[in-house]
Length: 621
Image (cartoon, rainbow, N blue to C red; front, side, top):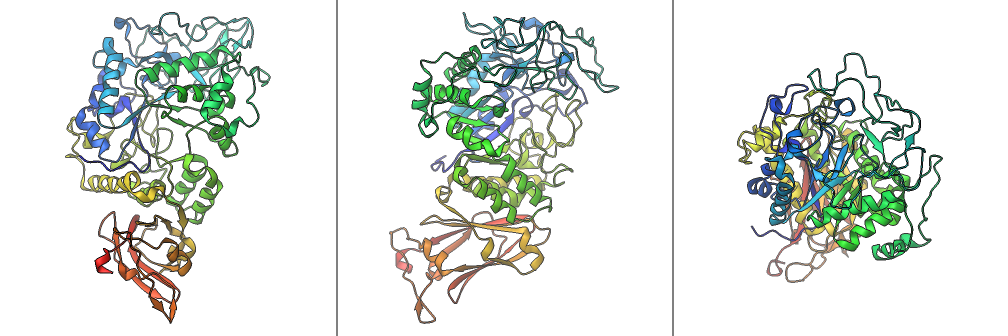
């Protein structure tokens, strides 16, 4: 297949443990034997080809590093984990127990688990996609112990002085003189859902106790704390003071090479070096980038050190971070060298309210304006493992209601767009699987993902078992993502058209959002209708806007302006071709009025149109 050049990254987040699972039992708190599990090998060439055909450039394989689990792998030399400090029978992928290993759940042969992951990396690259995995810099599993580290590499915490709360070169924080106590759980809670396990006894041997991942300092954390994890020490004292060199003034405006050079003669906390070495280990395996969990809980200076090291070894590495403090976005991008941050607190939150009819579309312009100077670094998404599924009842109750939002989120900026597996077929996350509750696809339990399984079709990945609505939704997603991935206008400026639009029904004006991607040859006009009814829209584009993007045809010739009311004003749109890139459901007309070009289009309910404007051949002008 001849694939056009990628205009911008499209990331496919897949929960690796769930992707290839064909078991549909979905017993709450079910074991791996009862509910099944997906494997690295399930990402066959057929599966990867189907993902690539969506316009995907990067796959974020969520849950690859070896994390704590209630499943027994002792026959492979892996020690049992204690379910008293595990969430769910499968366990959270964000409670990593060995950063130099991959999760045995994901291997057909757990003894060959690393080789199977390396083969997956090679297959993914063969399909012209890059591999992203998680690194969770803020915390690790309570029982972290690296048994697969390279020779001479000490495990996190192995050399700590445990008699003090804090020491610069300790990897963890401690509660001297006190042993860890399992949190008091709600009545009726059982860490394995009631299933027998030799280590379930309401205790966990940790003395002295370590600080918990979310910063809780008590020897007995609360059940709502991240009690399955312990916080990593990056040289921040217990009082919150820094115990490491600060970033040099002006370094924020320099490239990664300058950052890398700055850190070479500095003495730094031990955790900095350990986490750097972990990242470089995975780069050497062929991983192309990282998604950093809860990056804002780690000092920005560390990110300068780590990310400059990553870029030194792979200048094209893809670096994505989870940061939820808008007032610190620029700090993490400019000083911390993050390529991309989630645009969650801002654009995603605004879009969600618009979908739910709790906010006007004008809030989208406000949210975009807040980050206009860093727009290209703000990754857009509609779903991920932390957020509710669009089709879930608490969100929209229907995947169709997300269709207009997709066109906005994927096409409005030149930043990457991220798709969560199953989103494209309307997965609703309605299963209560044990620790994970309905509305989000569980990350803690063994489970099947029903709509996704229908697309997967027992490993054929042909969608043969999808319903007609699911198939139509996936086709729509593919059409929009192809525009996002390959259309040249994705590199062009964006202009809101809200001030130029008018709905035939006045009450729909706040439910329709339109914008322009101003490409010199193929500009796009995107109109998204969030309303429950079809919207008859009129866009009255003034002369100043239309003449700003006079179009050259394939021969480089621009149409000549024609007189309107005895004045040379508007480019003759009769010389243009206008095409809806998504489907043919919308009726489109163009006409001239004084000093303006008028675009009229009927946009179906919960739908979008993407109008590509191009000049006709010179011979036809």
